[in-house]
Image (cartoon, rainbow, N blue to C red; front, side, top):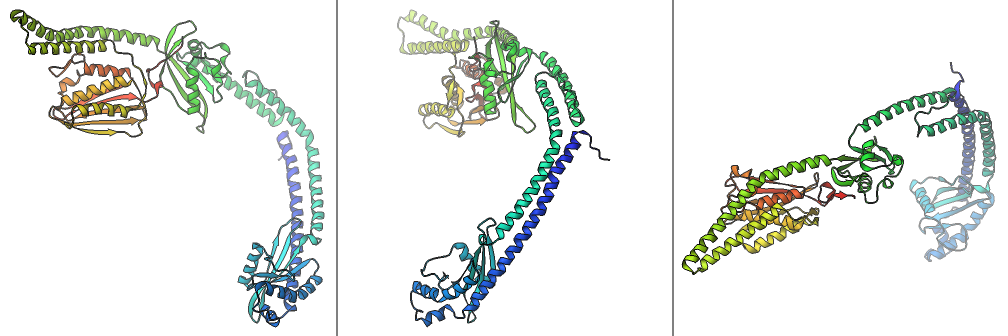
Length: 614
């Protein structure tokens, strides 16, 4: 059994009274208005049709009969219209006198003009009325049209005009409804309806004021309680009667669960060594774990502040967060050199990610900072040990490479001392050996201490064209050069001079592998997934034996008698300094392919230019 307990049921009854009763009354009154309107309109339609019938019967002559009778059959159109109006105005006047407020007339389809008994000829009908004339003629039966439902509505009647069994045109009649009592009656019914509706609404509102006031009071208490829960989940909402009380209890239970989850999250975030900073879509900090506070030097009151306000002016982190939110872009392992508040220099890997809701709309972003200082120091120690271990092999290689030129020079010096007459050939040989020694020393110095890279965005295809032009001029027509360079290649983030050195070395090695000429192919491809440009240098030369492939990038390892073994080692170090990689594929007799990878103009993807603060 339905009982009126609780605010919900009471409000339902009030709302039902407020809506159902006025709606029923309104529908009834609209029904009355509609019936009255239809009855009046039908009455007016019948009157107009009688008027056009009487006008049709008042004259039996056709338009041409009238014109011939007055000798105007061949007169201009304007004269014909004037004569017809003069002859028809008596009949028109009789009908308008019989039906006050009604305008009547004829339409001649041959002359395409309305004849209303006026003295002046003019194009006196609109497109709408022209369309009505044509429709009446096409249907060949009477037609009534109504225009407008407010004050000023017009009723029009049309009837085909036949004379001598031929369709001559249309007889028309029109009446402005504002000249009748229709609108006065309609206004009276309308005012009565509105009065009844207003009385029902006022009565319903008066009945609900007390309940609504009480309801609003408890709603306001719940609203204030929710505002308090926004900052303190330990607070509870006050009890309330009925359904509002159930809502308060449900909110209190939810607040307790959220408080527990918040505590669990705080405990879990505190155990994570990585610094985590979470901001909403407006840039307000909502979460910062203890590691983020320690690593980034955040103040205890950083929460609820805008993230640009909690970092120093030279910090890179606001830029990373802003680009993540504005450009919908995520960053991975951006190297950042950071000086902590304790003046300790830290090496950080910063990453960002977007926070999305169930509709895949952005609601915030996450900044993760991982302290890799100790790991990088350990890697540096391991790298130092590896370099020391390679030093012995390097020294042996240097001794071997330098001993041969020095032996040649020593032999020629002894020969001079014996004959006291150096030959031009011996001098040229000594010059070649000294030049070779100088090249070995320069490459050795470059390998031992590479020049600092000067990174900038550069057109990679343009760099390849520049290098190829040099070799084309040096070996005109000897090699078939095939270029498969990707169109719309994004700018590369490189040191152009160092990458040019790599390309020169790879192409020079390819040319030396084809002493009798051959095919040299260069290709560039952009990989949007990794943001890298892949460059391939292939030749159709003699190829490399499998046992040599694993040693190609070792210092002083060469398969050519005159090679220093430092060219590929230097190329390998340059590509690694660019955050890329170099690969080689080769089979004896099938040529060799070198492939290396460099980054596009997204410097945040690697440590080409680290962020720093100090």
